[in-house]
Length: 281
Image 1 (tube, rainbow, N blue to C red):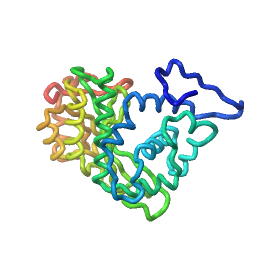
Image 2 (tube, rainbow, N blue to C red):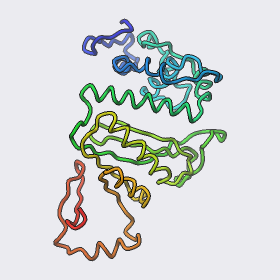
Image 3 (cartoon, one colour):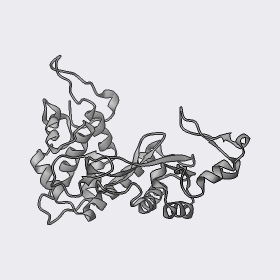
Image 4 (cartoon, rainbow, N blue to C red):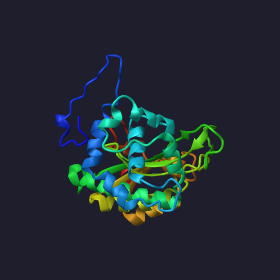
């Protein structure tokens, strides 16, 4: 098997031992990365000149990406890319875990912004291949997650409402495809709505530049209830649905004032159900 693949249809996956389970799917991932020119984009946009461990960002970044796709959650898990003949079919040099640790520590927030540029360029290229929503409506879900960590010296790690040590990143996901459109790392103790206004200010222009020209609707849970965020969405012309606490000021009385026969079904996710009042739709 060579390191260059013209089409995934010509790839044949084989095992050399009946007891082995290989990460054969990485061949498809590396093929897609090559088609999108990910290596060239990293080379052009990521500049860590003068930073210890900042050399050769392409091979190090691709090692991290492919390891995570294969399920890696720790730097040491990058060793899985060296198992068997895996490293021979990947179109880049697989970096050692110790090298990756030094590489990651070389990043400042400004360098992370360089990776943001790479992500947007990749999204634009992928959508340019026919995946863009175009004029069709697009629904985006914004939510946070908990990334638990081990060790007490990790920068930004803290205890949040789950009482677990970790981070509390925010993600924006395209509902129909599951694509992660934007993400931002936050401290583990960060409030759910922290940074949401700025997050939206970055997300929407990115989607517009990448090829989303139709109506955009963002869905939030009640943890994101914020007047500043709602005003920003309205300024950007973005539709939204946001759960609110029933005991929030004035909400309960407004709901009770709606006639029980006035509620009508509204379009929602698969296997989901929601109703609304015409006065508020």
